[in-house]
Amino acid sequence: MREYRFLAWLADLLDSKSKGDHKNEFHRHLKWLLEQGENRQPQIFCPYCGERLVSLFALYRDYREEKVFDFRHAYCRDCFRDKCHPSTIRGEAFLFSFFGRELNSWERPLAIDLFKEVFGLQGRFTRRKAFDFFADPDKQVPSSVILPATMH
Ligand SMILES: [Zn+2]
Image 1 (cartoon, protein in one colour):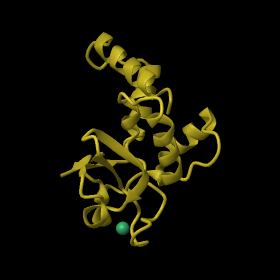
Image 2 (spheres, helix red, strand yellow):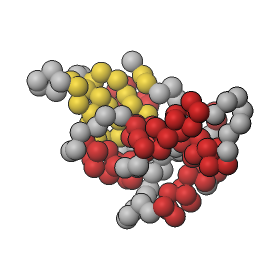
Image 3 (cartoon, rainbow, N blue to C red):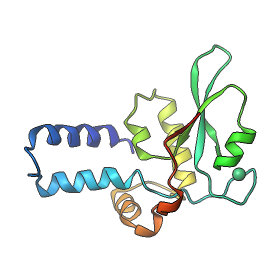
Image 4 (cartoon, rainbow, N blue to C red):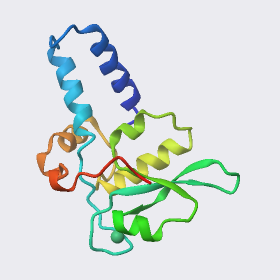
């Protein structure tokens, strides 16, 4: 997850260099891996209703009117609408492309902890674990419940 920005950058670079559909094996694998990170199903139930799997965390405005992510709470879609803080701007889905953003030094580890918890990834996230996780079709979001990336 710390390497996500590098991988996304590399994929873009290879995109810009490859003409048409001529992608080499590594390039195809990289694109596939990045796409897998966008369809993983969170594994924990919503702490508010206990009925649905979580799907969102909040971006809110803090007391200084700055935009801050709330990495301490995860909600299902319904509970997000009902229970999130009034200063919430929008919900963020658990997509691994989140790690492609500018995050500051204290945000990144909190975001990693939240994602690890939500996806049931205990301990160190090794390459082996990452591969098993991203390659497992059972951890894919069923297509019937794919959510939009943001909610307003
Ligand atoms: Zn809920």
